[in-house]
Image 1 (cartoon, one colour):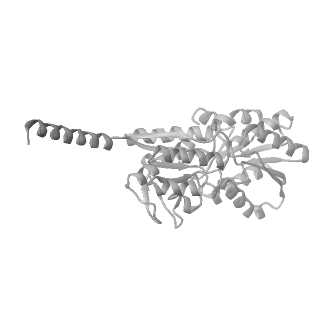
Image 2: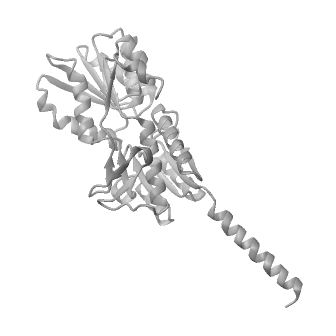
Image 3: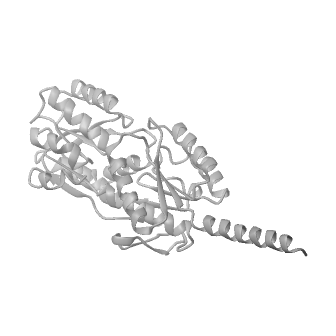
Length: 331
């Protein structure tokens, strides 16, 4: 073999090794898929995911989602992520079943798939991260209304979409404990599709249809803000209390005006952080999504998967006039 031939082979081998090394150093790409873009809750979760990426190192967060809360929009996003060959997809689903085929396709391509916040049917993901116990959330949202209705009254529910996994489960859990509140009547459940304008209009409809309405429960951060504004615009502050799940930064005005006496939420930053940590652990084979598995989650400690490979975080925290100023600048 000539010297030049040996030199060429040597350089080729070196280039190959360098290429392999460079590939090994490519960042892990985790896609955080929101129900829709422009939602403060998911933007806060994305900040948490970025915090996790910074701690993990060599990790890139791709924050994405459809422009409206539809399964079709999320399917388009998922297919795009498959084409981009991301390492993991963490999705808050608009429909637990409709997104399954696309997510199964992702898993067949070697992409780690988890759901968080709003779950996916088990066959479409490896694990699900719930923000809190579903039963506890259901109990909390009705208690928030009942605490300010000592003599009972009429309440309505303003939810997100009719197919939203998490809201549907929370409302079902609320229904299970209604026998504890015999003097409270749930007169209607309407859907604002997590759109501010539609949620506002649905609230107007509730106020007009039920002039003696006492409270509106909105287990959605978009809906609760819109409902509070509609109540304020209708001159119903003090008559209709808006409560449910919201962000302190977005609900501070409603607390100040009296449109809302109190509401609850978990920390979306911590939720996004934990989802990213779990996705990274599974995609890097540092953990496995099996019943009973314990997965480390950085500063949040760890989660343990149940028989359905689901895990839950902490209980919701209640915000009112006594503490809103402390948290409104946080999330």
